[in-house]
Image 1 (tube, rainbow over the protein chains, first blue to last red):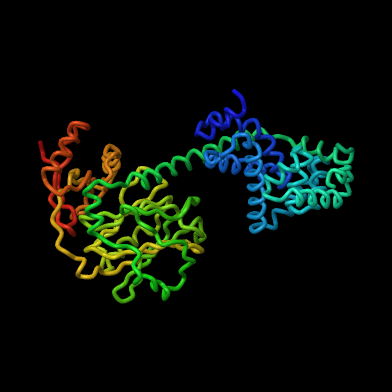
Image 2: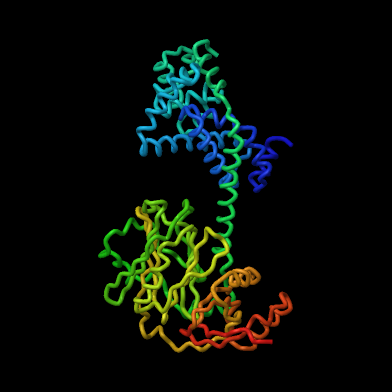
Length: 172
Length: 312
């Protein structure tokens, strides 16, 4: 069965189709979540929340071809909500997280530190653009932000990370 | 892709996928399933309430909501949140609130101000006051005049405070009725006469406020008795849930407490005994359950009588 057919069945309430669609995307959701929280437990919790929110609102999805974009949007929102909630509650844990990070694999730390320099929105935009390979237009839709703003977020984000990707030409 | 971002992308794809991921997805779907079921149950309560001729007649004679007289209400009560809406009733039904987490109906408060009284429902989620009221549905019915609340909530710590509502000059009784769904809490508020009412929803903190005023005497015309087709009395329990389920296509069905504190399920109210008997025949034909049902003549503000099953 092709992707669109699955999405349409999921919209009509078919749980098996929904499960298959999630299975295709679950690792992506997990990686995105992990990028925000940098630990497994929190990332898993975000995945769970994302699946839950998607499950109860999939019937409202109007255009089947945007399922993955829609799901990504839910995932990003869940992650950001999660961070906000967490910030309000515990500070002690953040210290523990940091020490955990130092023991984890080096490449993880590179990623975390690099993206850690950015605010949430810039982090989201760069992650979607360069790790998830989303188009700028897609990101603009996903974040309900004008294309021009997305471009300038990318530009400033890359500058901050001191990365030069030749993206400047693209942005002009 | 430029060289410099490559290590970051590599690190991103090196993020280890834990074996617990499948379980997290499962749990999310399971929560979704439960939530879908709750939404369906509540929807059933908000849509199945209908317009049998008897019900319509009752509604026309019962009450009027949203009176200008209510406009200044509640100004003097401290701790009231921001007004979300004044509930609009259609065919005696109205809904408010929105889906919340594991809500608790925490506290019920009765405020009196001259002839006007307000019943205030407070909610909490965990240990905190809830911001937005849980999804709820109210149905108005008559013989006796009452409101049936169905709320998307898990806990009802204010249950003992229902009893306290009898201190109201308008409220005859308030009691919980059984719910076969553990995330749906239901209760009836029975009035001792026809009242004017208004229901408002507030947020931050979430509250539902029922304001009651006396009917002007001009509205209190003599109402003829009606004929209730109902089950025999039984103690509070699942039997009401089961009868309600088998009567699910009957729009006027409701659970009531009788004069001795037993419970019954009413299938419908009729103007004449003949209509009630015809409906009883239908029940016999469709369900073969005529023995469990009786026809009771009831005056406008009369609480149902206790009628036990006959021995044979």
